[in-house]
Image (cartoon, rainbow, N blue to C red; front, top):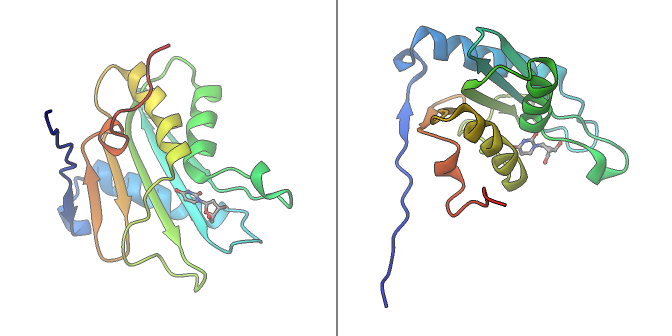
Amino acid sequence: MKELDITLRLQSLAPEELSEQERALVHAAMAATERSYAPYSNFRVGAAILLDNGEIIEGANQENVAYPSGTCAERSACFYAGARYPDARFKCIAVAARGTDGKFTPLPTAPCGACRQALLEYEVLAGRPVPVLLAGADAVYRIPSVASLLPLAFTEF
Ligand code: THU
């Protein structure tokens, strides 16, 4: 028997340690929380995706009275990016969230499993790692790729 370890190495950064481009993307994700529709959870999430054509696509969670019909911020952003610019490739993703108190969560909010799977597909299309910036009020986690957030992912069929 062999035991295998899968580890996630990430960087925890103060906002001023981000590059200018990363800071702009984090700001876009934070601004996108304002466009969340979350009357049921009051948890407002924003996502921003930098494309290789220079565009930044933003998404926010959109809830529905039939709860499972709602969509997370990350999926609203990645599906919008795919629908708007089908030939563009993802370069970087940022996510931010405000809790029920309306303030940005002190620690970063991480994408749910379904969003990790959805985002991974666009990383595969990009053909290179797409870094993910998870922004909290006190720290930003820089994750090297979507794949690193979804070990043993299903990518082949
Ligand atoms: N949500 C997101 O938009 N992204 C995540 O990564 C986690 C959860 C949304 C779904 C729901 O509208 C609300 O946050 C509370 O779960």
